[in-house]
Length: 223
Image (cartoon, rainbow, N blue to C red; front, side):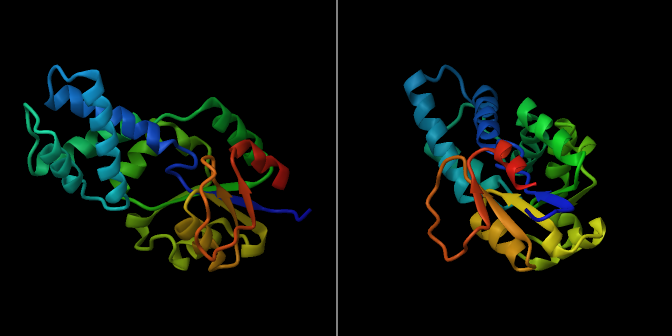
């Protein structure tokens, strides 16, 4: 087995469970803007909120998510304009938590290898997620797209990480859930990409990952 020097990780839906965070964010909106919603209606509302969030995933401005949701389910107390974005920026990062299994895995990996995060998104929100979960304690470098001017799958963001870590592409692995941005992106610079696919989604692209895992624990077999 090849000796690797570094593992690079995606953040959302790889190290952190974004789906759980969206659930918590929905409950905060429910408390802030609605009153006395029946359980059956709540389930319908949550499904719609997730649809709107998925549609606009990757965009920093979340106004359209809320406005679409409020149009579908008129609230008693409506957030408008800048208040929507402030509500998202101030609250969403606090909806994330990190599992003890992931912490244990990172502790095991960083005894042997350099570790990095490469994440797309706004600097404010991504930094807040990382600080609130104490992930900054576990990584040698953290690269956020808005901060550096490159976004995955642009090869520039991967090259920047390699330069900062002082490792060659063939000595690094990248782990991420997005087959195009993460796996296709890292392969642009000849980094082997491990597709984190816990929901066993079908790969409808021409991108062939180096490996596919449904649990982060399985990473240890590759190092």
